[in-house]
Length: 118
Image 1 (tube, helix red, strand yellow):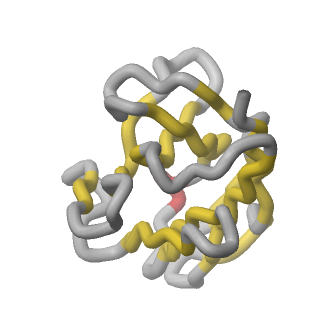
Image 2 (cartoon, rainbow, N blue to C red):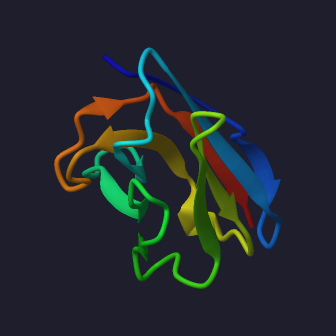
């Protein structure tokens, strides 16, 4: 069993940056792919970014490519999402996930809210 706890969300202005963190406990995450997803009220949860278990491969949604960077520190059992040049449309509840295959997450965190004002 893996527990995931996100932090780092908040209220920022358009153009600002935030770094989200997701700390894992219960089991090492080194064998899992890790990802970030986001959801706004009334919409489906959508993929944001993912990183492979080794950290050698990353992928991003087109909407965040070039602005967001996912990274992981297996020694700290933590995954990060650096978000730059934030836009109001990035406003959402952000969740981290751990999975053997990121398209089918095995574990979810409770999420952290990011609000970007214009």
